[in-house]
Image 1 (cartoon, rainbow, N blue to C red):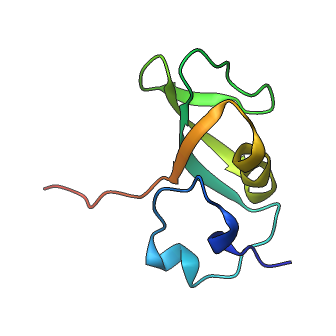
Image 2 (cartoon, rainbow, N blue to C red):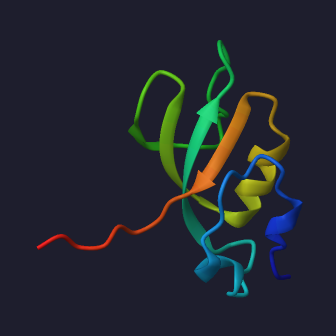
Amino acid sequence: MPIDFKLFRKLESLPSSLSSQSRSGSDKVEVLVKLRRGARRPVFVTPRTHIGPRMFSAEITFDDMKRLEVHPSVESMSLGRKLPQID
């Protein structure tokens, strides 16, 4: 079933390239997650990189994005974007 990104209230930004593609729940995506003050990381997410005490990046499925959306520890999330190469 295609993912409707408009349902994610905690999602801060959505690259237009992702919104135009049809994705399934098992497809993976990189996200940046910001936790609420004093909250613990959801156990179903394994961080790739810690950015600070309340922020980390992770590679998760779109189904796990739905779980993050309703998780009380998560303040916000955004999809990772590839940066242009600098020569």
